[in-house]
Length: 101
Image 1: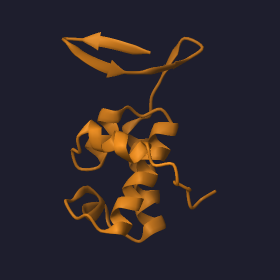
Image 2: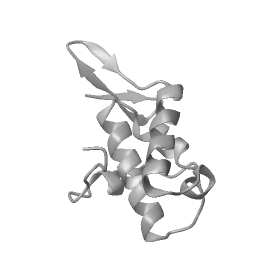
Image 3: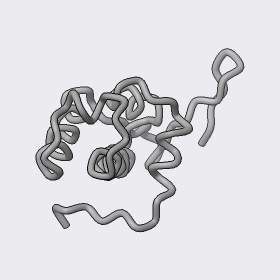
Image 4: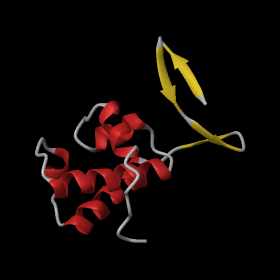
């Protein structure tokens, strides 16, 4: 379901009429898990580096956060203020396997 706010499209999802979201604390916990799973620091995952391991950690985090109801904007902010188009590109990866599965 897309809402429009001040000329911008804001993405929100609803389950049985309740808007789904993820708290900042839980989002941070997902970020810590992704960092531990790939052996990278939070500073690195939020930084500009483009190493394969960092990109994979960002993709896993984005998928996890999206699955738990986080908005594209919140995921982007958690990953160092990345643009929503970058987050969408992470979400379109179809070879993502969560290491915890």
